[in-house]
Length: 182
Ligand SMILES: C[S@@+](CC[C@H](N)C(=O)[O-])C[C@H]1O[C@@H](n2cnc3c(N)ncnc32)[C@H](O)[C@@H]1O
Image 1 (spheres, rainbow, N blue to C red):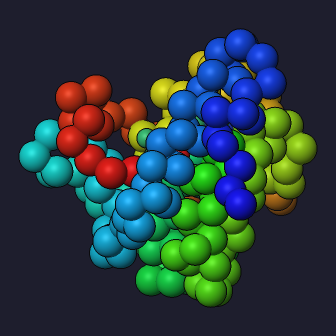
Image 2 (cartoon, rainbow, N blue to C red):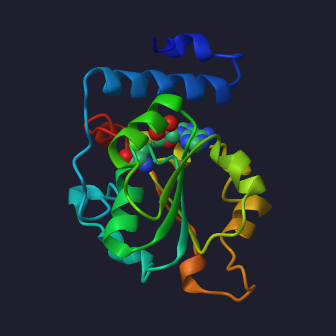
């Protein structure tokens, strides 16, 4: 029997409440059997969807990427499958992680991780590129972009500087986010 997501709250910290909210959301999507349509490009959430698509990430074939707050995993799967990137995709909500595994566990070169993105940034090996589509807003700003672990995670392993090591993030407008499934 599936555990009630509401029973997964350990405390009332913002981090815990955030995890709880997304766990409930993921459970809702599991219960209604929602499967995210496979994207053929990244929709960054720019007005009119006039954004640069996946191309803004540059040539990512064979590169190690990290997706912060991957949700149902569709963008990580897209980058691994269609662009041959090697992607770690992390999400803090067990039910969101479960959704990603249900839909994309068989996609080569993508690994779905369950855990807090900031914790992972403190532990992980450097990535060539760290990105997030509508995920960064749920992380404490002082714990992510401004912190040494994120900077280190974005640095090429050989210590050289590279355009592809730039972190790439987007945060959608609330009214736009309310109209989409994540
Ligand atoms: C708005 S959804 C975006 C999902 C996906 N990136 C997309 O574009 O469809 C935000 C996701 O971030 C995840 N999230 C929130 N806080 C997180 C954290 N501290 N660490 C990892 N993932 C987190 C949520 O569980 C949720 O799946």
